[in-house]
Image (cartoon, rainbow, N blue to C red; front, side, top):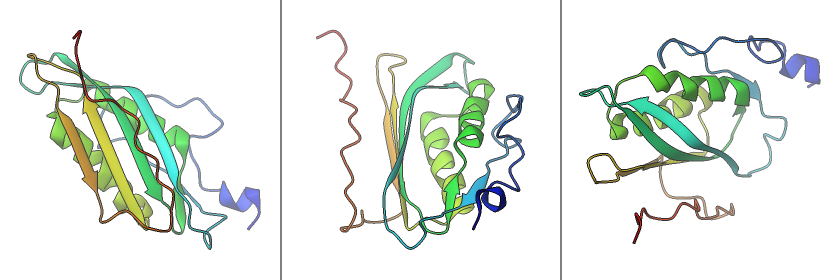
Length: 155
């Protein structure tokens, strides 16, 4: 498959794209995996993810780590960045944000495997870490630790 065929249906890459008003309006795009016959891992890290507390409207901050083993599709990274950015004005609890992102990616990509770690910074004195994965980690793929230390505060 040629590069022009792989990228033919993308609507955001290579041009100015507005930040979507909400995660529901965000367009996540995918491209055919040119290495579909090879099992390998992909990691996206979003260390400055933001959303809003649905009760107070105060900002919430997280460090997200998304790992997946693609099958036939790859997520197009600009569309993923825009999708994640769309949460900055979206009110939802930490658990909902983290799991919703994982489920949307699974629905889009149908990967062999996916996990997401949401490492949320404290609000009200308590950090919340949220994890979702589609099943046991594949034994034939090297998957490093997500590399985010538990929150320790100042101590």
